[in-house]
Length: 113
Length: 114
Image (cartoon, rainbow over all chains, first blue to last red; front, side, top):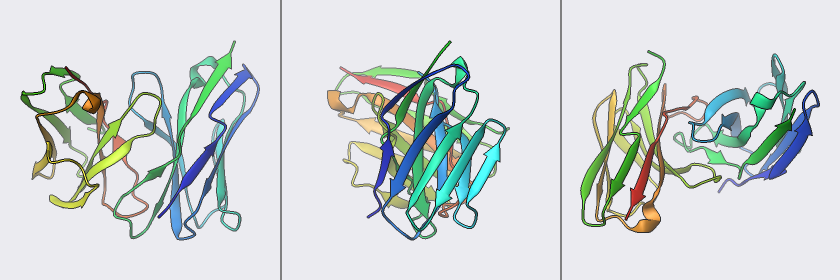
């Protein structure tokens, strides 16, 4: 079955710096890759997602890149702010998996003012 | 309404109690999910309902019993739970249960089993 590995498990950056979180997946049939942000005590919130027919997607300070050949995708956050501090989860899904998202183990991002 | 809601926010129960968690969405989504989440770990899928029918059961113990009374509501009935079942229980919904349908999470119910 699908396996998603996420690195690093913790990441500390200074405010204004960039942060990059990487995920690799094992199932070449996976075609949907969402990223969720979860603040302490809150629900996971979708921040960006990418489907396998595109290689990059941007939304203001957040971008996701996908390399299907290498089976990895990355989250890029530019100009980080303290409110970006949270746990970030990547996930993968395939068209015939019935909605079964496979999550990475999470990255705890800390942005220091 | 663009949110998934869950009640109660917190629940404390003994191992002999019976309780239920409730989830509701009014986005017209036809797939609903139950997840269990331990602290700083990813959500673990428990059940998927697609068009009000149970489509995935991730080998969850029978002390957890899901129910989907209609397309907007999802319940999780709890009975004879163990302390290790203490966790955040998240509900989610998506337009369909297809592989690229975005899942939207509710705020969760924080369950403590004594």
